[in-house]
Picture 1 (cartoon, rainbow, N blue to C red):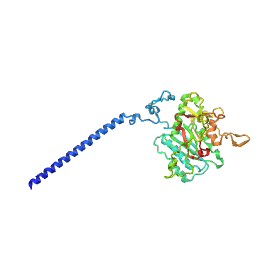
Picture 2: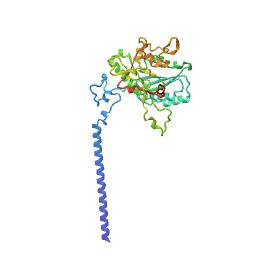
Picture 3: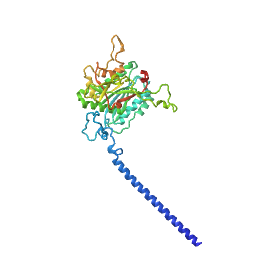
Picture 4: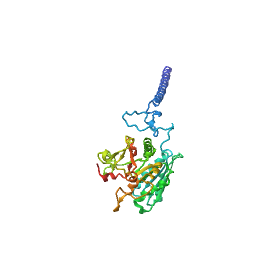
Length: 383
């Protein structure tokens, strides 16, 4: 009996020893694995260009973003834009922006909400933004409370901010609602850096404004500050060609698989004869083009450009006036409606200000904006 108990105790001690050894070996293995993994990740992080901080592209530092790419010798190279600062300031940081929106009534309220969301993002990008909405209807208190909640910008930067003001105009102004922004622009010409006029169904984003400023600076670096006032960087509107008479549900969502952006105002073919025009300026033509139809429904301008257009021959951009019409029938416009006149034709029309609209070849997509109704494409037909 005593011998059996002795054997049992020895067997138990052996099992405990084996267990301790197993735990020790497992712990050693896991520790070694952790050390090796840490060393591997450290090496990967510091030597792999996809993970190293020093190789990540910086949104506002074009030179850094393109440092890892080699362009062919035949590629178009824009003029060098160097900065004396070793730590460049983000392009939208501290920018003072005045945005005016023509919104006649509540018919496009959902679109207006989207427009305001995009403009609010400018504040989060670091800009100080003042919005003025021209309308002919009285907004209920509930709507105003909703806008106050949605348009709150919590950017802690002292250079950022956001205000929204509604300007009520009489209903009989009709399409002349688009006129009022022009006086406001020139009354506050020295208070802002960038001025934006838009209709209430065009979605503007921080990318739109940043791209506009980048290209405007580039144009000035190419042709000089004086000649640069002959040009303005434009935008192109697009819509999505969603299928007609289809309610999108889980069972019909496949109907959108071929949906794409459509530049419905520029459907002429061949494109480079009927839709896109070559820029005549030899210094700019490698980098820019213009649209044959230059209607935009909006425009952006810097304070210096607005001042120059005020004194420009045949322009007087600060003066509000009616769109050109048939002398024998004044109610019949000859160059588009009042809204087309105020947003585009007065500025770009050859018989008026004659400013040349520019669209960058390389960054074209950054200056395209969504026309929220997605309905005009159907009106002009599919081509």
